[in-house]
Length: 116
Length: 111
Image (cartoon, rainbow over all chains, first blue to last red; front, side, top):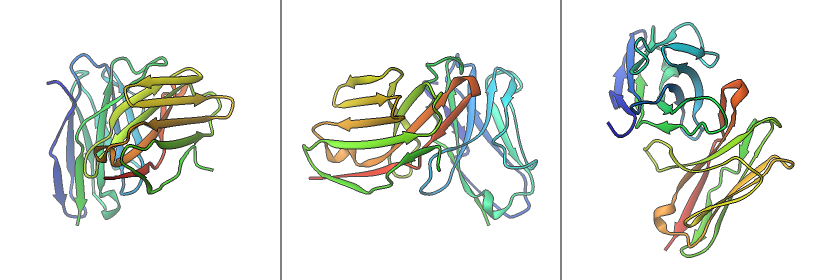
């Protein structure tokens, strides 16, 4: 596709449940980023993939959060034992290389997660 | 001190005026700077990037960077109601693989 795609667009779940959020980056982009955005705030970094490996996962808030990118393209963000505080918009972005100065990142439409 | 600071606004300008959006950052080694536009309920859209001190123009948009003052701005000339959105400043430090966003400035352009 032409841009970054994310599914689902909306996810409502109950506290304690497990959720998976999917991101399909722009074709040919090797770098993939997950962010979380709460109302009135800018995106908050969660994790960065360079190819298949997580190059930086320092933004993951705790061990309930995990992400994979097994073939270097599609990525899945997994949240175990969801809590109400996890409610936010989860954004995925990709960039051509992820290195050097020219790291222009392009965002997908986001997944709005609501934990009841 | 926040790493990337922006006035939250709202900033209100009349149609046809120049809108000036400002951003300061704390990490002196940051190298690359981006402006994103975010409409309500939508995801951020990249509108400008700037890497060197000075001005960079793209249509009605001009980004200005002053690394010595750790300051970056976005000017929107001939503002249109369709420019009404939140503008996010993002700062990239490539040796840390670190992109930091400000909280955004909400701009309203009144017809």
